[in-house]
Amino acid sequence: MSQAARDAAYNNAAAVADSAALNAARRAASAEYRAAHAGHLDLPYGPGARQKWDIYPGAAGAPCLVFIHGGYWFMNSREDFAIAAAGVAAHGWTVALPSYTLAPAASLTEIVAEIGLALDYLAGAQAEFGFGKVVLAGWSAGAQLAASWLHHELPAAGLLISGVYDLGPLTETYLQEHLRLTPADIATSPLRRPVTDAKPTIIAYGHEEPATLVTDSNALHEHRLAAGAPSQLMPIHANHFTILQELTAPDGLLTKAALTLV
Image 1 (tube, helix red, strand yellow):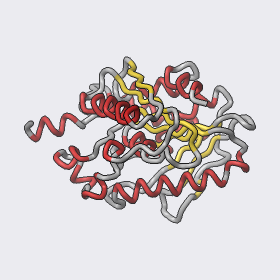
Image 2 (tube, rainbow, N blue to C red):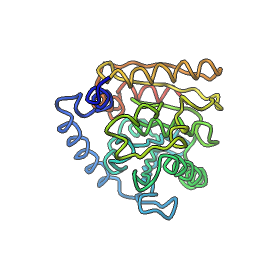
Image 3 (cartoon, rainbow, N blue to C red):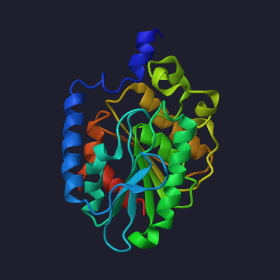
């Protein structure tokens, strides 16, 4: 493949003509949602400036959705995705969104470790917030981070959306300038690590996404099945950005999928 073809294979924004407008709409909706639910924001789980949670409490004993944002590990923040809470929150769920240090200020190995630290904090806060079983979810880069921590004691299930699960090919794309991936970072790839959990997991992707993401989603599904871990593949008629609308809507396909996991 040419350099241009390799770059295009992982350029989700360029693959969707109106991606800028879709992202702007999501950020605006998230700002509105966050302003309307301001009770438990910016809760630190570590000393870093971005090591914080936003938690939107639900009904006592109801499940909790942990949603890890995407942005190829070097863009975005939890504030940009607050609207992801709206779908399951309408069913009484608690929703918790963490941020993490962005590359290249942190390596992929360090970012993965931060998510573990965040989950440790949330496990300790479970009694305080009164939520029940946890579904660990993520979109795009966040799906890789969620997949990396399904073995943690806190989540009971996983919902992985539009993820990249093998980091190796990224070293030959424009992303390497931002990520500076090392062999140790690449080793964090869910497709390069043994599956050590047996938790029900839904792996979703959009029919209109770049082929690389579709391939990775199918490969992770097979990887989990080969290890005897529960896995369900969920293709959706959407692109990399419109697929999130299936999580923000109370009757969205991803909202319904989360409801089935606990």
